Image (tube, rainbow, N blue to C red; front, top):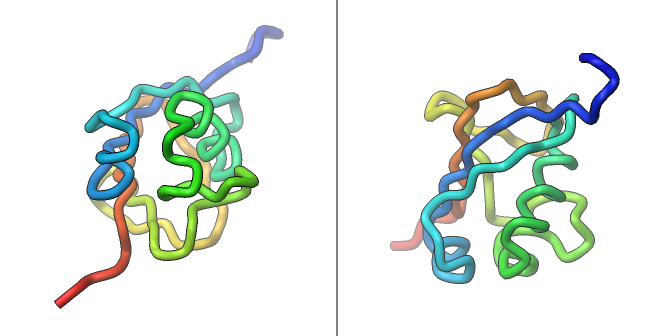
Length: 99
């Protein structure tokens, strides 16, 4: 990285309650490098403050219980931290199933 504030560009698709509260299906984010879980949540809250309390914890530390990120349609990201790369696509969805 070259001395400037480097970022990682990612897309976050929203489903269910997050989509309803944000009023959008997806957002493009520039997450500070190295892009990890905490920086992703903070960038998402800045872009879509309506998600606070509706998928994102109010204190910006993580997702609320019952929500999960899926990375590139391949893996659900549990509570462990992760690192993102340019072009990654994430889904923010409820991990709860009703029935």
